[in-house]
Image 1 (cartoon, rainbow, N blue to C red):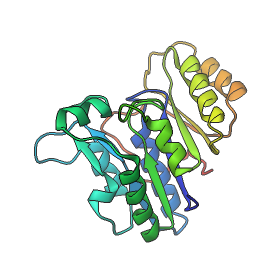
Image 2 (cartoon, rainbow, N blue to C red; image 1 turned 30 degrees about the vertical axis):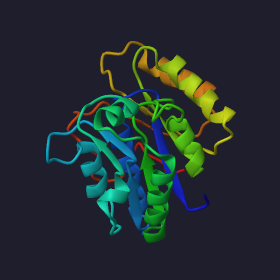
Image 3 (tube, helix red, strand yellow; image 1 turned 90 degrees about the horizontal axis):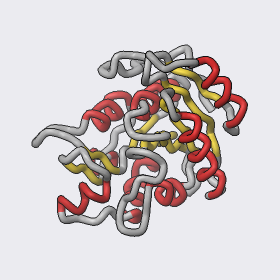
Length: 221
Protein backbone atom coordinates (compact mmCIF):
# COMPACT_ATOMS: atom_id res chain seq x y z
CA UNK A 1 0.00 0.00 0.00
CA UNK A 2 1.35 3.40 -0.96
CA UNK A 3 -0.90 5.86 0.91
CA UNK A 4 0.97 8.09 3.34
CA UNK A 5 0.75 7.11 6.97
CA UNK A 6 2.44 5.79 10.08
CA UNK A 7 2.09 2.57 12.07
CA UNK A 8 2.56 3.15 15.80
CA UNK A 9 3.63 0.07 17.75
CA UNK A 10 5.12 -0.48 21.18
CA UNK A 11 7.51 -2.60 23.17
CA UNK A 12 4.56 -3.77 25.27
CA UNK A 13 1.04 -2.85 26.25
CA UNK A 14 0.63 0.26 28.37
CA UNK A 15 3.71 2.05 27.05
CA UNK A 16 1.93 5.15 25.71
CA UNK A 17 1.17 4.29 22.08
CA UNK A 18 -2.09 6.26 22.11
CA UNK A 19 -0.48 9.32 23.65
CA UNK A 20 2.25 9.28 21.00
CA UNK A 21 -0.27 8.65 18.20
CA UNK A 22 -2.34 11.64 19.38
CA UNK A 23 0.76 13.83 19.47
CA UNK A 24 1.68 12.74 15.94
CA UNK A 25 -1.83 13.54 14.73
CA UNK A 26 -1.70 17.06 16.19
CA UNK A 27 1.76 17.64 14.73
CA UNK A 28 0.59 16.54 11.29
CA UNK A 29 -2.53 18.68 11.55
CA UNK A 30 -0.31 21.65 12.38
CA UNK A 31 1.23 21.19 8.92
CA UNK A 32 -2.20 21.72 7.37
CA UNK A 33 -2.88 18.05 6.65
CA UNK A 34 -6.12 16.12 6.93
CA UNK A 35 -5.33 13.32 9.35
CA UNK A 36 -7.32 10.16 10.03
CA UNK A 37 -6.59 7.68 12.79
CA UNK A 38 -7.09 3.95 12.99
CA UNK A 39 -7.14 1.52 15.90
CA UNK A 40 -7.75 -1.74 14.01
CA UNK A 41 -8.34 -3.74 17.19
CA UNK A 42 -9.34 -2.35 20.59
CA UNK A 43 -10.05 -4.32 23.75
CA UNK A 44 -11.51 -3.10 27.00
CA UNK A 45 -14.59 -0.88 27.28
CA UNK A 46 -17.80 -0.70 29.26
CA UNK A 47 -21.06 -1.82 27.57
CA UNK A 48 -22.34 0.88 25.25
CA UNK A 49 -19.17 2.96 25.57
CA UNK A 50 -16.32 3.65 23.17
CA UNK A 51 -12.86 2.31 23.93
CA UNK A 52 -10.89 5.20 25.47
CA UNK A 53 -7.96 4.86 23.03
CA UNK A 54 -10.32 5.00 20.05
CA UNK A 55 -12.11 8.01 21.55
CA UNK A 56 -8.81 9.87 22.09
CA UNK A 57 -7.68 9.18 18.52
CA UNK A 58 -10.96 10.29 16.98
CA UNK A 59 -11.01 13.46 19.09
CA UNK A 60 -7.57 14.38 17.76
CA UNK A 61 -8.31 13.92 14.05
CA UNK A 62 -9.80 16.36 11.55
CA UNK A 63 -10.98 13.99 8.78
CA UNK A 64 -14.61 12.93 8.41
CA UNK A 65 -14.53 9.16 8.80
CA UNK A 66 -16.70 6.23 9.82
CA UNK A 67 -16.11 4.77 13.28
CA UNK A 68 -16.39 1.28 11.78
CA UNK A 69 -13.32 2.04 9.68
CA UNK A 70 -11.41 3.63 12.54
CA UNK A 71 -12.01 0.61 14.77
CA UNK A 72 -13.16 -2.47 12.82
CA UNK A 73 -12.79 -4.79 15.82
CA UNK A 74 -13.81 -3.79 19.35
CA UNK A 75 -13.98 -6.23 22.25
CA UNK A 76 -15.26 -5.53 25.74
CA UNK A 77 -12.84 -7.76 27.61
CA UNK A 78 -9.38 -6.22 28.27
CA UNK A 79 -7.51 -9.22 26.89
CA UNK A 80 -5.24 -10.07 23.95
CA UNK A 81 -6.96 -9.46 20.58
CA UNK A 82 -7.23 -13.09 19.51
CA UNK A 83 -8.71 -14.06 22.88
CA UNK A 84 -11.18 -11.17 22.74
CA UNK A 85 -12.21 -12.30 19.27
CA UNK A 86 -12.67 -15.90 20.46
CA UNK A 87 -14.84 -14.73 23.36
CA UNK A 88 -16.95 -12.67 20.94
CA UNK A 89 -17.24 -15.52 18.47
CA UNK A 90 -15.49 -13.73 15.61
CA UNK A 91 -12.17 -13.97 13.77
CA UNK A 92 -9.95 -10.95 13.13
CA UNK A 93 -9.34 -10.75 9.38
CA UNK A 94 -6.48 -8.75 7.87
CA UNK A 95 -8.52 -8.24 4.70
CA UNK A 96 -11.24 -6.44 6.69
CA UNK A 97 -8.68 -4.15 8.34
CA UNK A 98 -6.86 -3.45 5.06
CA UNK A 99 -10.12 -2.50 3.34
CA UNK A 100 -11.03 -0.13 6.18
CA UNK A 101 -7.56 1.41 6.00
CA UNK A 102 -7.97 2.12 2.29
CA UNK A 103 -11.28 3.87 2.92
CA UNK A 104 -9.63 6.06 5.55
CA UNK A 105 -6.69 6.79 3.26
CA UNK A 106 -9.12 7.94 0.56
CA UNK A 107 -10.49 10.65 2.87
CA UNK A 108 -7.26 11.91 4.44
CA UNK A 109 -3.73 13.00 3.59
CA UNK A 110 -2.27 10.84 6.35
CA UNK A 111 -3.51 7.88 8.39
CA UNK A 112 -1.98 7.23 11.81
CA UNK A 113 -2.54 3.58 12.68
CA UNK A 114 -2.10 2.47 16.29
CA UNK A 115 -1.52 -1.20 16.96
CA UNK A 116 -2.75 -3.08 20.01
CA UNK A 117 -0.43 -4.42 22.68
CA UNK A 118 3.10 -5.14 21.51
CA UNK A 119 4.60 -5.86 18.11
CA UNK A 120 3.92 -9.60 18.03
CA UNK A 121 0.59 -9.82 19.82
CA UNK A 122 -1.58 -12.49 18.09
CA UNK A 123 -4.64 -11.48 16.07
CA UNK A 124 -5.87 -14.94 15.12
CA UNK A 125 -4.48 -18.48 14.96
CA UNK A 126 -2.00 -17.46 12.25
CA UNK A 127 -1.52 -13.68 12.03
CA UNK A 128 -0.16 -11.19 14.54
CA UNK A 129 0.23 -7.40 14.74
CA UNK A 130 3.51 -7.54 12.82
CA UNK A 131 1.72 -9.30 9.96
CA UNK A 132 -0.82 -6.46 9.91
CA UNK A 133 1.94 -3.85 9.81
CA UNK A 134 3.53 -5.72 6.94
CA UNK A 135 0.20 -5.87 5.12
CA UNK A 136 -0.29 -2.10 5.41
CA UNK A 137 3.35 -1.38 4.58
CA UNK A 138 3.54 1.85 6.56
CA UNK A 139 6.65 3.30 8.21
CA UNK A 140 6.83 2.11 11.81
CA UNK A 141 7.10 4.31 14.90
CA UNK A 142 8.25 2.30 17.92
CA UNK A 143 7.15 3.55 21.34
CA UNK A 144 9.56 2.38 24.03
CA UNK A 145 8.12 2.27 27.53
CA UNK A 146 11.03 3.49 29.64
CA UNK A 147 11.17 1.07 32.55
CA UNK A 148 13.35 -1.79 33.69
CA UNK A 149 13.71 -4.28 30.81
CA UNK A 150 13.02 -1.75 28.06
CA UNK A 151 16.41 -2.17 26.37
CA UNK A 152 15.87 -5.84 25.63
CA UNK A 153 12.26 -5.28 24.55
CA UNK A 154 13.18 -2.36 22.28
CA UNK A 155 16.11 -4.10 20.59
CA UNK A 156 14.19 -7.32 19.97
CA UNK A 157 11.27 -5.38 18.50
CA UNK A 158 13.54 -3.31 16.27
CA UNK A 159 15.25 -6.50 15.10
CA UNK A 160 11.89 -8.02 14.16
CA UNK A 161 10.84 -4.87 12.28
CA UNK A 162 14.10 -4.95 10.32
CA UNK A 163 13.71 -8.68 9.63
CA UNK A 164 10.38 -7.96 7.95
CA UNK A 165 12.04 -5.21 5.88
CA UNK A 166 9.46 -2.65 6.95
CA UNK A 167 10.23 1.07 6.67
CA UNK A 168 11.39 2.59 9.94
CA UNK A 169 10.11 6.05 10.86
CA UNK A 170 11.81 6.27 14.24
CA UNK A 171 11.27 5.69 17.94
CA UNK A 172 9.85 7.56 20.91
CA UNK A 173 10.84 7.03 24.52
CA UNK A 174 8.04 7.37 27.05
CA UNK A 175 8.77 7.61 30.78
CA UNK A 176 6.11 5.25 32.10
CA UNK A 177 7.99 4.60 35.37
CA UNK A 178 9.05 7.83 37.10
CA UNK A 179 11.08 5.81 39.61
CA UNK A 180 13.16 4.04 36.96
CA UNK A 181 16.85 3.99 37.87
CA UNK A 182 19.47 5.39 35.46
CA UNK A 183 16.93 6.90 33.09
CA UNK A 184 19.44 8.99 31.14
CA UNK A 185 21.79 6.03 30.74
CA UNK A 186 18.99 3.84 29.38
CA UNK A 187 17.93 6.50 26.89
CA UNK A 188 21.56 6.87 25.81
CA UNK A 189 21.74 3.11 25.22
CA UNK A 190 18.63 3.31 23.02
CA UNK A 191 20.13 6.20 21.04
CA UNK A 192 23.27 4.14 20.46
CA UNK A 193 21.55 0.88 19.49
CA UNK A 194 18.23 1.63 17.78
CA UNK A 195 18.28 2.49 14.07
CA UNK A 196 16.97 5.98 14.76
CA UNK A 197 15.90 8.63 14.42
CA UNK A 198 14.65 9.39 17.90
CA UNK A 199 11.47 11.42 17.43
CA UNK A 200 11.42 12.44 21.06
CA UNK A 201 11.53 11.38 24.68
CA UNK A 202 8.32 12.11 26.55
CA UNK A 203 8.41 13.01 30.23
CA UNK A 204 6.21 11.15 32.69
CA UNK A 205 2.64 12.44 32.57
CA UNK A 206 -0.57 11.59 34.38
CA UNK A 207 -2.20 8.64 32.55
CA UNK A 208 -5.33 10.74 31.96
CA UNK A 209 -3.43 13.43 30.05
CA UNK A 210 -3.21 13.25 26.26
CA UNK A 211 -1.23 15.60 24.02
CA UNK A 212 -3.61 18.36 22.96
CA UNK A 213 -0.89 20.00 20.90
CA UNK A 214 2.28 18.65 19.31
CA UNK A 215 4.65 18.82 22.30
CA UNK A 216 8.17 20.16 22.22
CA UNK A 217 9.63 16.68 22.68
CA UNK A 218 8.25 15.40 19.35
CA UNK A 219 9.92 15.76 15.95
CA UNK A 220 7.99 14.52 12.93
CA UNK A 221 9.61 11.78 10.83
